Every structure is written in structure tokens, then in C-alpha cells.
Amino acid sequence: MTKSFSNWTRWRDRDQLEGIKFPGVYVIALSGKDIATIPFRWSEKIIYIGMTNAKGGLKSRLQQFDNTINGKEGHGGAARVRFKHRDYNAIVSKLFVSVSRTECNVTSNKPSDLRLMGNVAQQEYECFAVFVKMFRRLPEFNDKKNSPKK
Image (tube, rainbow, N blue to C red; front, side, top):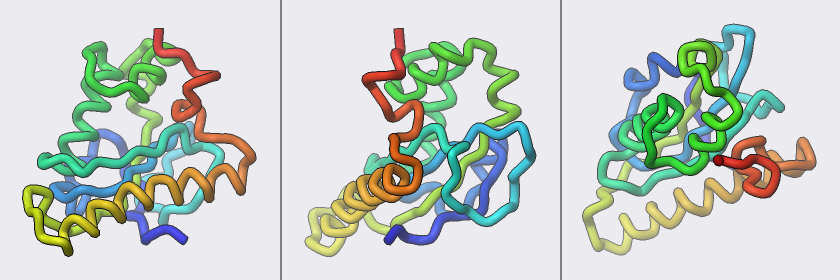
């Protein structure tokens, strides 16, 4: 199964998530209902699942996502979100994020850190598998065939 995820957090409050400097998996939901502080659970409201092993950790990757939905470039999944949801302020008020961090040193070549970074990538695919098993489809903006970005 998947590692534990944080409670849902408002998109605008994402930088306050614990451990956001580390790599990990992130799940983004679009909800008209305020789900902030509610424990993570799988839902059809999830629109995107992503991961990062970059030096900047989850904070940097989520900022790339935010920059892209706000009209810049840099995140393919976010470009698909922007293609459908053109009004940044309207969508941001409905976005929530939950993260599962993995504490490791991404600049290390120690076998233990390399294994942990590999686990992050594996966890992302495990999340896809769980979502598809539950809802018989990928999250909308992970589905490259049915969700254009241009």
C-alpha cells in the first residue's frame, strides 16, 4: 500500500506542510468543499498525482506546479490543468494538496539514500495503481491521452 499522507491542506498553505523540503509524492484534489485539515483518503476529486526527487524537494515541485497553472511553463501536468482551468484565482481557491515525504539526502550517492529515492518513484506508481483500481481511470490530469495541454 502507500505511505501515509498528510492531511489535506489548502493549496495556498502548502509551504506550511511538514517535511516539504524533502522529496516525496504529492496528490492534488479539486473540491468545491473545504477539505483542509481532513485526513487524506482516496477520492475521485483527486486530479493529479506527482512525485519529486529534486534537490528542492516537494516545495520546489509544488511551486513549479503553481507557476504553471498561473501562466508560466515548467510542469506538464499543471499545463493540462491550466488548459482546462484558465482562471488561476478561481481554481486555486478549490485546490488542496496532500504529501507523503521521504526523508533522505538527494545529493548523496549512498545506497540507503538511492534506495529511498527509488522508493519515491515506486510510491508514485503504487498511488496510480490504487487510484485506477478504485476509480478505473487515472486522475484527470495524469491522463495524457484525454487531457491536452495545448
